[in-house]
Length: 501
Image (cartoon, rainbow, N blue to C red):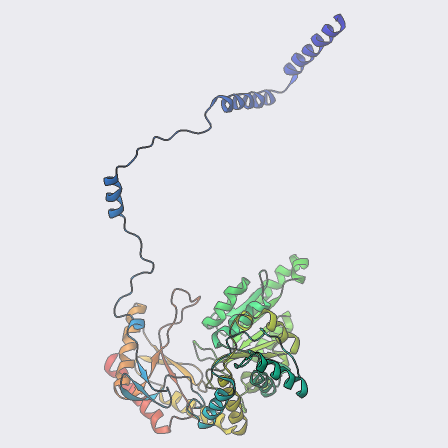
């Protein structure tokens, strides 16, 4: 017992000795911790808030005073979206707008195939064979290459189950894809049922989070939506400015050298348009090809405006510049302009296109293109192949009106001389975008009242990355005669003189 007592005293002496030998900051810190523990032990974990019950009358008063915020911001009654023009009949060469016949300078019917009898007959024959639509995505039943006897067996089974509609993957879709690939001289093509969704689905099918996309700041809204869906790192370069693009590529090259491991798994893309929807400018594709191989990036080319327009045979900007189409990683275009149908397509190497059949959202989750529209597109391709002179005719008419529109007081022409969609912008702004839009609207109305149908370029102003200035869009087609082109140019000059001056 005595030994135990002596041991306890010795421990106590050691503790006191250690206390005196400890540094001052250590003692202060321990003292603060002890005080904090004591405070936590004796303080309340929460404070009871005083509660006052409201009477039923007070509750009613509060409810009556509460005003919810509107679901959408107020829209003025004179907003263009609420005061639209009504078109009666098909938007062909002669269009009826608000009951008045006009020459159509608004629809993107570049080759005049919208009212072509051969195209309409092909669509009607397909309608009788397949019905109106497909009611299912392309890959719903799978894709099979069938021999004739196997095809007969499958058809017998379908009849047994009373399936009278076309399969979401019908032979007309396969034929259209084959024809597009052959026309564009690529290995394979894939079709979408909606033109806007084509490039908007193609971009996120390849570019993912962490990848880098260099894109022209004048890119159309469909490209912008595709970039947004990809969640990639977006780097905008000045419109058609190859020096600015190379500056960004050099900066990225420097960043890659700092972290080579990350650089090895980061994909890099350049996304451009052949003919820009918002400006009518052609992209400098030869310079882009040089930058592609110099900095090891991939090129995605959107050709909705240039397909069926540029080149000796209408194959687009690659044919226009005489560039090997294999230098382009992916080409996208819609079929709603030159082919006068609906939907869009992508073409390129087989392994690139096949990837979209599993990853292209607009392909996997949308009902396939109605067979009658696919048949119309096939017939439109036949006409393009049988009449290659049509592209030179369109180019000549574009150059004619481009020249005629020069020198209009108060307006400037934006776009290449061979672009079928030109823009007329104010030389000098009124000071606000709203006033500029109203002024250009008066010019459009002046022309409409005189028998020329034009339209203003429309944008989702709050969502555009780089909002283009207000403009009047002038669309040229092969159906317009020289006299009609001259009349449109003359009316625009009169309108500018009357409205702007």
